[in-house]
Length: 464
Image (cartoon, rainbow, N blue to C red):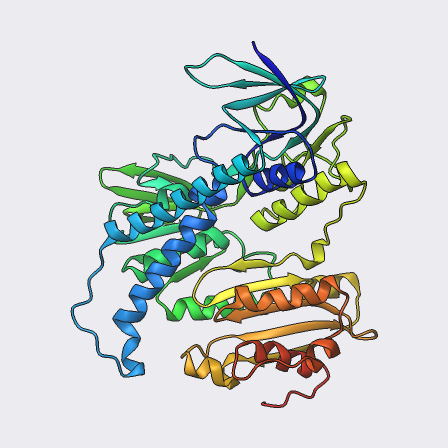
């Protein structure tokens, strides 16, 4: 084996890994990044965040032209779906972005290794690729950013076509007549809404008693109400005991209920840390019961010089969380300081309307015994929302009852994913709801809804 030595080896080129590699190179480190897939970007860019958003946007445009342009005085005839062209657009976006990461590696002199990285101990990592000679590289420090993979349930037989996870659902060759989504989490709702807009009957089966478990309950209830109006069917408290393909149909089995017959099944029951095959046992690193790698506040594992970030450690599996952790981790390596404020990390569901949260929910504040006030303002009372014909939803802001410091915000409505950024910055800077309320927001904009919700915390919303 040939061997090269680096200051830092990053295992994984997803959002956490590639961003950490670039930032480490900017700080003067000699960096190598190992990625087993031919394309860079990880699950998020290749078969997750980016392609799903491309399809969400395209399907939303299709549904708007077909059913909603009339309200604007635009009559459209002969609307047809060209699924092949829609998929081609998605694939082009993915290719452009993966190529962009390769350019960033070249620009910042990050050495890319294609293959499976296995930790051997003493700073050594082997890189193996089918059909090629194994390579041995070493480094003073190693950062594990190997991401996650889609989870499955017992007795569900994936065939990668009729029954599968999100990767399959991003590339169906035709619109399903009846799609069953197992799990009412973010991925299930996003991809379920894509195919519902394109004409599929969509049935969502969820084991819990609410959609998006863990999210603010008021937000979840409003979302389900809207999605039902859009034609999606929800069944809660359902335990799926199996799924199989019979001919050109799928049979989904439920505990205590009749089987559901459909033509495709999307299994969306969460993700698991991708820690198997990394060679953690060679270093004596043990994962927790969820498969996560335990780390300290500086992302150090139990082994000196070995770090971990992103989906392989505890916390929400979000691309931007991994990015923040990657930057904080390598900055701490070089400067001695790196920090992530987890209360300021937003989460977004890119359905229509979008759903976004940051900070604490009402349920979390009540459980912690934290005194709080809340202010809420509806989209339907906002001029810009009316002009956009986007009147569904609301903004809710939670602030400490004594200090007025912003503790959280929850939004369902048009462009919620963009609107939540203002509150995330407010939390990062320790702002109060009064600070948001006193800041001038351009008129007419959707951002005014955030300001009005902040005013409502103190009972003084102007336009309601």
